[in-house]
Amino acid sequence: MNDDDESRSTSERLGVLATVGGVVAIVLVVVVANLLGRSGPAEEPAPQAAALPSAPVPLSTSAADLATMSPEEIATSALRERGEVAQALPSGAKSLANAAEALAGDQPFDFVLTTFNILGSQHTAPGGAASEFAPGRIRTEWAASLVNAYGSSVVGLQEIQRDQVEALDRSLGGTWDFWPGEALGGAGVPQSLMWSSAVWTPTFTGSITVPFVGKTRPQPVVRLQHIETGREIYVLNIHNSPRDAQGREPERDKAMAIEAEAVNELKKDGIPVFLVGDFNEHDEAFCYFTARAGMIAANGGSNSGGRCLVPRPNRVDWIFGTSDIDFSGFLLDEGPAVRRITDHAVLSTTVSVP
Image (cartoon, one colour):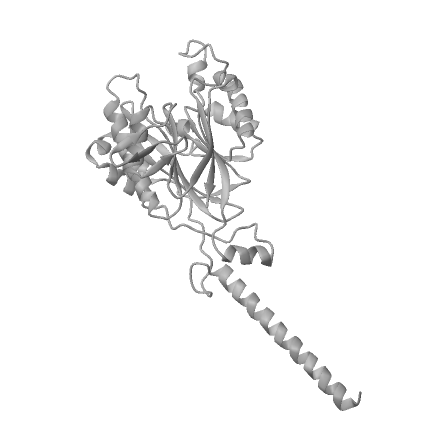
């Protein structure tokens, strides 16, 4: 080969390499631009998670206010400051292949959701109404083992007391976060939600206020971001007035109306909403929330055309979700391990977010 032929061959190879390099560069630019601006122009920064409010609106809602305000007013005022949903780039997208897959659409994921009335330690103290049970600290350690056995990563708790929150935190190795804990005062502790910090990060924490045994109680609302996929959900955990307290039916009715309006408000953000807890109602709770908030129950049933078919068996504890998710593997656990911890069933289910 002469010098001219060798020079042309070298130039051609360099040209091909330059072209390939240019295409790769363009692809990388497009991918990076999309990753940095999934919800807007490439030059705009990625959306930030909403700030966690230090003093949620509903704390100022008094019993007198609840009596005069409509459920919609109570729910919307409480949730007004929740900020925008932040579908950020998942931390798990560590490679170009994972990032490209994320750009193709939302990634599905599964998790286990549980509701657990843990039976407050005050009830099982000497002289308490359920003193035949073991002390609260011991029962809470057993509860931690159950949560791990279910594979749960989000748990709505009811009746839990300060000492039990501390015991549960210790038993779970400090790897779970709680809301509100003591952040909303003593009235907020018994309805605390918890989630595995290895699976979820909170992007909003707040509460709604409902009437409860002649007073008011904050019911926690949390928006959680799934760390692996970057997708978000809302969870509202509730405990309504007990049935054995005389004259409490109107309180439960008002509470359910507020909770349904809260779900409808949260649905506007276009992400799954879950409502869990101790409703102190059986059939009425199912028919109400499936009709008024368009929810589905983890244990089945249906409500259409004015015909409400309630799933059997059921208890006063429920797990509801919006219709954009699927439930499977529902467990209503009243086995020996549960019976030594609480006087309620423990409900657990797998949630699939498509």
